[in-house]
Image (tube, rainbow, N blue to C red; front, side, top):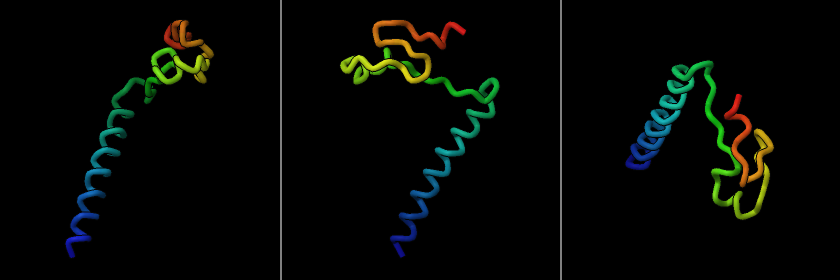
Length: 67
């Protein structure tokens, strides 16, 4: 019986988290969620990988923020 209580609590916490993300999508202009660039990710900086969103290298500014 305690197992069901724990599963119920987990589902409730995950539900609240998903609801919070959904509300944020509704309230944010055009339902757009900001992305991040490789230049802001320390792991990507070490590898020198270009950003998948805008193509900026870690040493460059994010090109999608200009638009």
